[in-house]
Image (cartoon, rainbow, N blue to C red):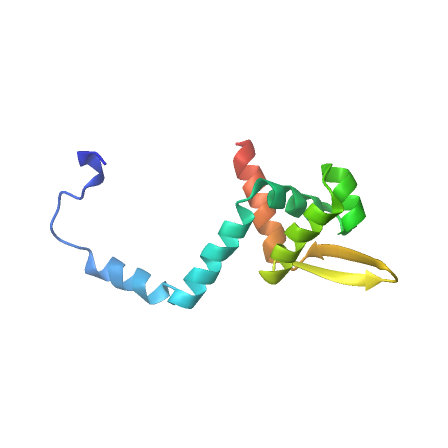
Length: 117
């Protein structure tokens, strides 16, 4: 850390601190948020999530699309399902996966857009 990262003034803007503190989520929500970003931080899962942001897909389709084994895809989907990022539905013997909700889709879209800038 260099000297430019240190606040040179001893006073604190108490009003601003109070406003932000009032809006700050509790520790449980912060932990869940951090866990979500942690699970999204893996390149394989990011590819899966991007694919699912485009269309609902089954394990076989994801396997072919990403050039990975069905077992590897299933493992990643299980992690994503356990953290409430993806959902699934069965149609006969086929299980289709999709992103849980619009919030996850927006996270993926925003992340990709940011990376392209």
